[in-house]
Length: 204
Image 1: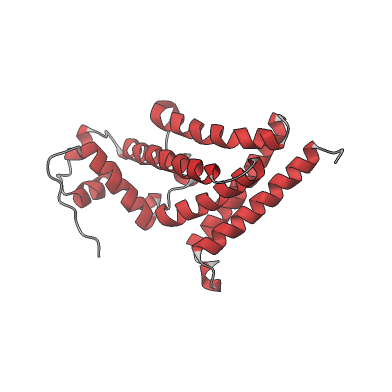
Image 2 (image 1 turned 135 degrees about the vertical axis):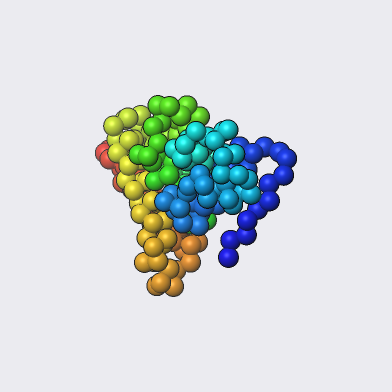
């Protein structure tokens, strides 16, 4: 049963964003509404509109915070890895764990419901994520931008796929824990990165 939080004095905007993230974590993006965010936060239905003119703006703020948190998770994972191949593999595992916990992955951060042209904070957070990933990808492909982007496409498709399949129950019904699925995503990412590295170094 969801407990309605009591909002007192403080940063209402921040409280509403945190509530929005809770709603997304519980039921995905479809569960987010301004009215429910207000009810859950413990304020009037009109109060959120002082900060967010509509659902899209609240959704964008939640997506921006998710992007920043995911970038932090990637940064920590990459700091423990050695070399660009392992850096990418580490982010695949970090992504699965992040999405399993928050249900706010790339489908939220880059949602078609949000016009990124109007949300500069979200656009900047998204660029930070992509820049972080592009550096090791370029290292693997020896600076070939086209190959690096193709590698990232495969990398993110694998990581997001594993996270999604776990969320819908297809993988955890078979007795796999989130950590096991994260490790499998890392293994696939590593295989993709190693293949890209071999293609970039045909003389080896």
